[in-house]
Length: 73
Image (cartoon, rainbow, N blue to C red; front, side):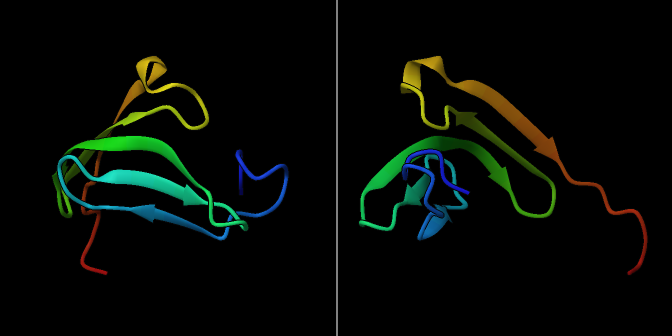
């Protein structure tokens, strides 16, 4: 999926899993587009991010996700 590449698939999407980490899309031409910034990250438990995929950073939404273990598998 790509929002920035004129309908072309993205070359990659990178998430830096740490507070202050970036969420970056790299287009087929190598151009990078900032989708958001990690605000808080606790592996296997919680992640929050300012997310503005394709929009100016000041329009970001705060997205919070909590992970819960449901079983032993």
